[in-house]
Structure formats: C-alpha cells, structure tokens
Length: 137
Image 1 (tube, rainbow, N blue to C red):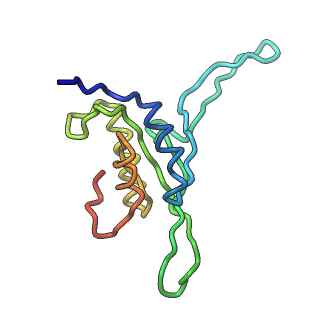
Image 2: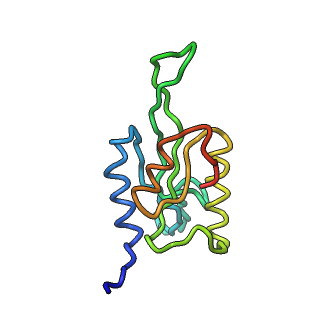
Image 3: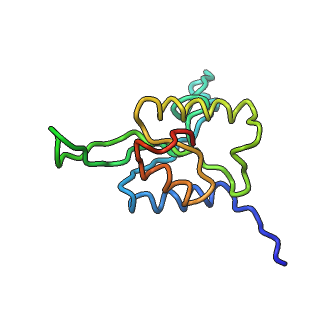
C-alpha cells in the first residue's frame, strides 16, 4: 500500500492561484510580516500584508447580480487561507489559526467569500457561493 504524502502549502497556493481565473477570481499573494530597513544610518520597521491573521490569497470574485442591477458584474472580496494537504479543519486551532479563522469569518459575515483550502476542491467550495450553503469554512 502506498503512503499518502502531504502536499506543501506553497504548491497548493500556486495551484489555486493559477486556477482562480477559471472561477472569475483574481487572487493576489498576501505576505504578512515585518522587517528592518536601515537608511541613512536610521533603522525603521516595515510591515507587510493586510493585518495579522489575514489570508494567504486576497482578491475578488466577479459575480453577476440580479434584479435592479441585472447583467452588471460586481466584485466580491475573496480571501483564501491555504494550508498543506494534511491539515485538519476539525482539530483545535493554535493562536495563529484562530486569528486566521476570525479574519475569514469577518469576511463571510460581511458578504465576502472566504475559507481554508487544502486543495483545489476546497477552493471551489469557497468560490461557488450559494447563500443556502453553510457559511462555516
């Protein structure tokens, strides 16, 4: 019997990002962190990314809405937190994962598309929005 190996997060991230256009989504890498820069003998801290806990992929998904705006595309804020393939949603989250979960829940509660993804199928579930779906990702 062959042993199933975990696929690295960065590989899954690239697969999702490269396939996002097929789902009318434009996603950009969001690297959160900070580093020091020294200019003219002065040190300063540069912070990157949206905020602590924000998702790996940030962007929008284009949808066509109904009724009075029939036929007009809209952009829906989209956030995808990519995890390696053997990551389990059901486990107890560490502090960083809790922050990521809270970020995703805020996006969903405000009408955006968001969730954790360990593969392209998880990504499809996030993007193919249905208001009757369970909102928890």
